[in-house]
Image (cartoon, rainbow, N blue to C red; front, side):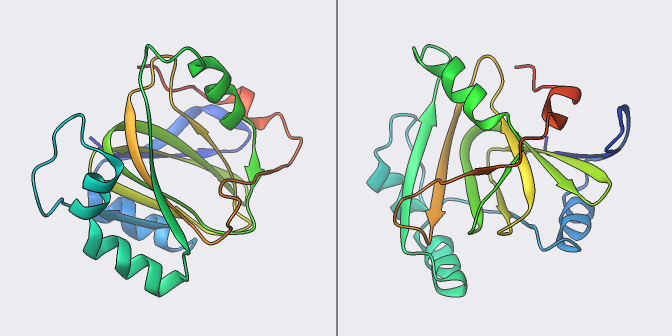
Length: 180
């Protein structure tokens, strides 16, 4: 189940929690963060190719590409048996920003986005069917957990793909990690 938790950025022990999709979407929208649910237009096998996954969500992908000027789309996946899973996890666990939207649609599995907005940290547990779009310049980080299992569609305006500008803050080390 998708979940939003809101913490004071100086108190990672206490949070308000929301699991209602509409409430999560409305709260995040106040910061320009898009949170949607998508459904495939055809059944997908677990081993579906990148082309099959993109085809199953083509209408929603094209809508976002048109609305936001995205130039490319791809599918990324990670499983608990991946030999570089720890390296990938650590790469995304530091607070950073991007010069473009960070868009992820979870075709399968889960991941936890942390948004540091003002004096609050918003954690958004995204699961199968969830799309999150973090605006350019928003400070955030991502945790896939020690046993990552996800398949996600990514959209980019930058031809270089994922490019992070790390803030140097250690705030991410103070908040609870995704345990999967």
